[in-house]
Length: 277
Image (cartoon, rainbow, N blue to C red; front, side, top):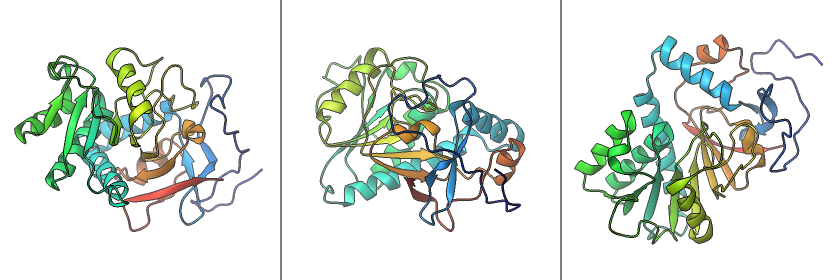
């Protein structure tokens, strides 16, 4: 089957089944999918695998110069906007718990918490490790929240960090870099929120879900909404709940260099809802 010459056209592939084990061969050889997700205009939005997203991150940082701090800020603001939309739908009085791990996903969740706190939204941070074990740019986000006197809880606190996770919870524990089943405090937090939280908003990929295959090798968050970043991940075809795509301001040239089919799905905005065919 051939494509047209339009820069915004895609090869139409077969729709994968909506099974939790949709890709039964694992993710070796798995590649982008231009058939499953559509934006509000009805135009296809290419989904990428975890490996392809790593390549995007590498090119955008090493070759283009858009660093992790800038993208983390875009992720945090987009996630906060999604959370505020949920909260405005009859949930305006509920406190918010942000579950955060290390790495870029956790940093995006912490940036989200700052935006919420700046808007006088009651928010607390629940880490899956001691604050001293948070590193890099994510640690910078944590220090800002410490200076703001935002409540930060972790497994080494005297209080029970797993209490009061029954309202609105933001999941930014594990991103697309999941390797194997969640363990330790992260696994305990996932089990707790799945059984208690009324509403869960996940950042990029629900924690515990393989971004490429959609498989859950262990416990996994079951979100009401996922705010995925830059492009949807192929594994999100198997995930329930609503899906929102958040712009990280990655320029077209990055996708061109990697030969990833791309046509700006955001129009004049910074986030759009996605649906599946």
